[in-house]
Image (tube, rainbow, N blue to C red; front, side):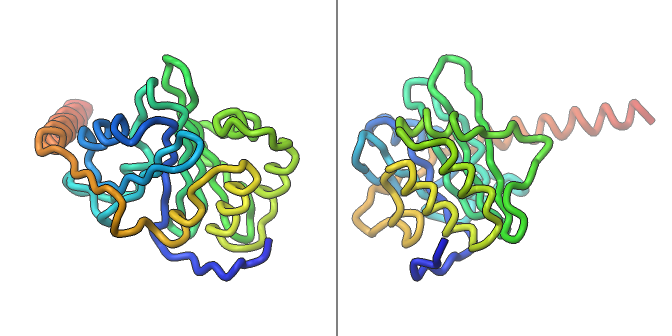
Length: 210
């Protein structure tokens, strides 16, 4: 891969959702991240973070992490995420189907694919199926196994191989004309309350164990 003149910055990210912007906006309002929505070709909507921080309390306030991990409803899938986080490239797929199944590929410069034991591994054929592409799996494998280059370059190469839209959104970010959707206060309060309640239960369980 050549550089294509790209200059990767921390916190790059794009979630492609195969659904209308109106439906994606309803999903975004029930989340925790202020998001840019961009209507793209092929029935895709691009979702990018509009603010570095999510509206939820720390440590669950990293916008890209919350966007990457958030489940997309069955009616709006497939969803494919392309992210640069902590110097690594991350690709995620939430496939079509009633049962939610999110799979991940993590790539590190100088190493290539990095196994993350707590994240189900994304296979090339699953990525191709989610994109609706006719790309040869070998082309994807060759790209993600190549340890040279920078994270954003690898992601751009995969986007091009799959024939997906959104390259400019990933590299340069959304425009001022793109729609901004803010999460509802109810969603934020509900999430923070659940996290706080879980922390209390874990602390109590830890005390009982001692």
